[in-house]
Length: 264
Ligand SMILES: [Zn+2]
Image (tube, rainbow, N blue to C red; front, side):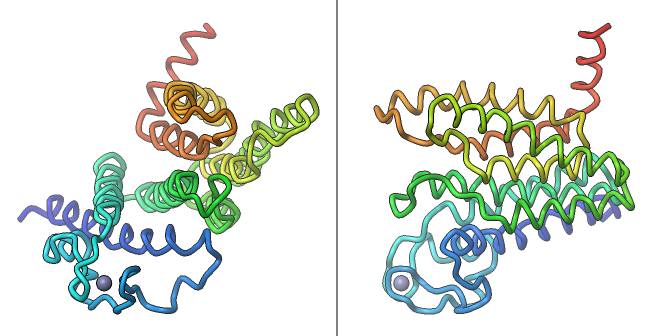
């Protein structure tokens, strides 16, 4: 097999494994329980999951989506999160090749998927009042993003300004909203997520990502609020920010040339 194909398969499999780890983080971080103990077990009967059934996607297919011990249904979201992570890692590798950027953007996409999916799943879960974005992704991610500035663009100064710009881009509207309406509109998790994105990408992309997430948020969020017939339903805005940021890293040159043409 040619080396490039071999590496592509390898990256895809690494993505599946990280997707499997992401399932654990998504399930456990919002509840504040340990991510290491206890080992994965069936939520229905509590039996430990055998290590060979923990193999990403294949384990689910072998079990036909059912627990081996009690026959309880295993959610299809587990193999889907694994596949999504695998595909994203592969796409990053196909775009950025063997470089620091592939490592950086795989980490970045992993954090965005974790933050966005946790926001969606907790917003839909009645155990939680609204969507949650754990600090592990956003504050931890801000630090990791700044560290990558030593081996990739943007440089540390641009990354620091980016983090500040990301933070302020949502903190200011949130503060204004609170002043005017006397209630919380935007969650702190969204603000910290934007800060993390600025640390990874610098300040210029913030413009696109705020705009892009607002467009996606309106297109998806407004029908969702109407369907739910609940004005207080908190749409998981963090998920739209994550989608906009992922779109940005794949289409950056097109978006920048669009901006330059508009302003020329
Ligand atoms: Zn079971």
